[in-house]
Image (cartoon, rainbow, N blue to C red; front, side, top):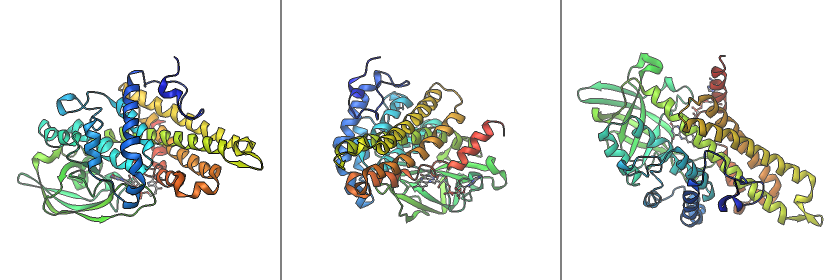
Length: 398
Ligand SMILES: Cc1cc2nc3c(=O)[nH]c(=O)nc-3n(C[C@H](O)[C@H](O)[C@H](O)COP(=O)(O)OP(=O)(O)OC[C@H]3O[C@@H](n4cnc5c(N)ncnc54)[C@H](O)[C@@H]3O)c2cc1C
């Protein structure tokens, strides 16, 4: 296969020299149009949105106008009729927006907020939440984590009591990406307190419902352009029509959702590493010390070689997991491995990129320090490194 015009560009050693499956010719035009959009509509504003700790909702409307919020959804709901590989292109190209928070804020809606509505929602729920979600008019967030329960999902305490015609919800959620702006929050609740994993359900809790509020907006190490919320539920009545999937079967929804979330995180980390390697090679070529480019020093050249090797290792495993997932195989083991490997590798590559850049790496204008802060969330969010190892260990029969 000959190098394409897309991949022929870029700095040698960062972007792949040729297309790697599951990406095919078919994805080139989409990649080029997303790249143009990201470079024109997102990247120039990223710095300001980082400072403002917020990006405007009109970003969703603009993405929707190009069809980018519905790439993997059927046309009958306003989607583009594509699949997860098309969305993988979006995730990779968002790495060019210069803000992990902006990519995460968009990703929370596209990768974890709307998918459970599509997969588990009734036709009526899809009309009410998915269709306007794809149009960028109603933003979705996913709320599982609580102040007292993160990794240990089964021990969440937010409780939904059965009443005539629906449920009454009491409790709280924390660290919810997009939770400040969300119009609908796909919320994990306990419906059978004694049921452990089998007592969980999901409710679609809407902005404006009485008793539902954003109790705190959280400050963070990175992801500054994205909003992260603590949410409070005080006797919130949620009608039966907002139960997502079956009562007490919410754990299956969580597990199903995690697979795509983790592949999305792995793809994001691989693309971020590609940007860091690209930037570091360019810097090492231009920056001179002791009369020569720093890339001429073996120490720097070997560091860049090691960074590129980490990138390609993570890419190979991530694309492998993506291919298995896309073909409908059970890919829990490979998805967990890709998530584990890519997130830690991205932190290491970001740290090494700072070293290659010297003092400039610590300065804001090069974007390397932001990448290092943004990427640190990877080994924690979406299931920690320790939980990934637990899942992989269990898959090995241990
Ligand atoms: C910026 C940000 C955005 C987020 N966005 C969302 C969101 O949109 N929606 C949402 O629901 N959640 C979100 N989260 C929450 C995230 O998924 C959790 O932080 C993560 O799952 C870890 O849970 P925890 O913070 O409660 O840590 P804990 O579960 O308390 O873990 C603390 C430490 O103990 C370790 N540990 C826990 N259990 C075990 C075990 N069995 N074996 C070994 N070690 C263990 C962990 O690995 C970790 O190192 C977000 C978090 C952040 C920081």
